[in-house]
Amino acid sequence: MKKEEIRDELKQIAPNMPLPGNTSFFTLPDNYFSSAQQQIFQKIKLEEQWKNAADPALSPVLSQMKHSKAFSMPENYFSE
Image (cartoon, rainbow, N blue to C red):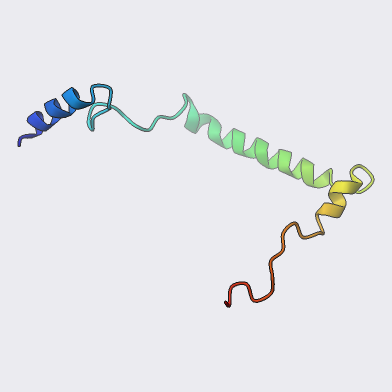
């Protein structure tokens, strides 16, 4: 079969399905590359602020959780 015949058959079977070559499946927001650096630095600064906010006087519950294990598993779990 020729490519055109295959394309026509696919259009008949699934008219709403995007076909290769017709549509770009990946899109980026406008100005993505011009604003990405600024957004990354803002997130880094925010993360640094959260690290500094881990003062036990401000949040005693969170400061205790940082040093505890949230999950556990039986010994030799992977050796069996």
